[in-house]
Image (cartoon, rainbow, N blue to C red; front, side, top):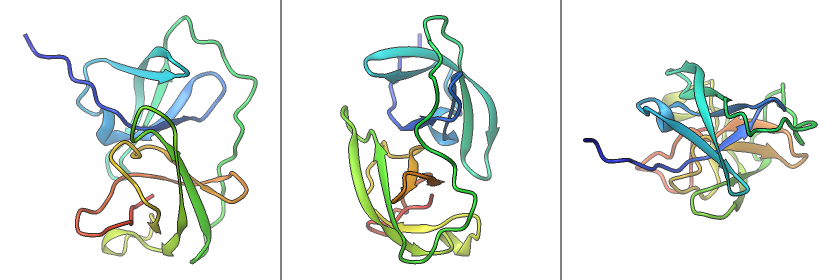
Length: 155
């Protein structure tokens, strides 16, 4: 019998009816998934994934979930700017953690033009969380921390 494993990470609600975005590496080998919000756990399924971008789209399938009237943020459709202030909200521990920094490069690891490098303190558990601009728009998703670089991640 396999032991139950519990992993932590962050995700965010994309639509009021229960679609959530997170990092694929958090959920890809899981047999059962559950998200927790305000102390309530909800069963979810992976409905779409992209290994190249390390992203997963989840859907809450729990009958106890009540849809929200709306989400309090938007996805930013433009390009971020070098030096732009950004912040994260995530769950690297049991309670919500705020971290702030800036876009430090307009390309990510190995000059990846589909990602940014940021100078924001991150911890395990921030993966899958949103990266916000100063107006509360989502400009990226935290996908991982480079092991040889301190205070930089690839949203």
